[in-house]
Each structure stands twice: as structure tokens, then as C-alpha cells.
Image 1: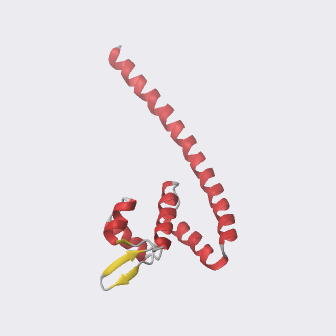
Image 2: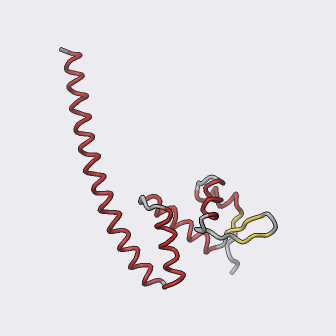
Image 3: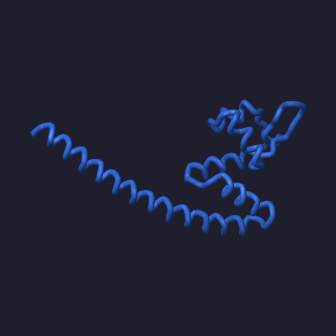
Length: 123
């Protein structure tokens, strides 16, 4: 079975990221593609890491949190990484729930001001 290898351009297309983003992820050591001359190639490890990075960003995690979490796997293994993930997820869910409350309050206030303004125009 041959290992998957994506070019820089293919990696950008697969994950819908800009070249600048991909280069930045490499710069901050989230990704470490193979190099052949000036070309970069991304194997299954980098593809898996990029999948986790994108998922983490979707959930609102900071890149440094993601980087630290990925390092846990390399230094301590799967079980430690899974426990760290649970801790991170718990913290992030609490943060998102707080943001949800704040958004609900803002929507309620905006709706009230909008309705008040509309009533003044109509009346």
C-alpha cells in the first residue's frame, strides 16, 4: 500500500485553506511536510494533523492550544492526549455556553430596540 502524498497545492485545496495559512501552520510547527527541493509534500501524518487542526479551529480552539495538544500525543501517547482533549473540550464548551448566553442577551436587546424604533416610525 502506498502512502498518501499531497502536494502543497493539493493540501490547500483539500482543506480549503490559503497558501499563507498552510505556510503559517508549518512556521508554528503544527505541520512538518517532507521537502524535495523547493516542493513540499504532505503524508498521512500531516493530513491527519490538518484534519485535527481544522476541527479544533471550528470549535474555537486557539492554534497554540491545538499545538500543545498535538505535542501530548508525541510525548505521552494516545491516552494522555485523549484525557487532555476531554479537559480542553470541557473548558471550550463552558466558554461557548457563556458566549451563547451573551448572544441571546444581545439579540433580545437588539430586537427590543428595533421594535421600539419601528413603533416610533409607525406612530
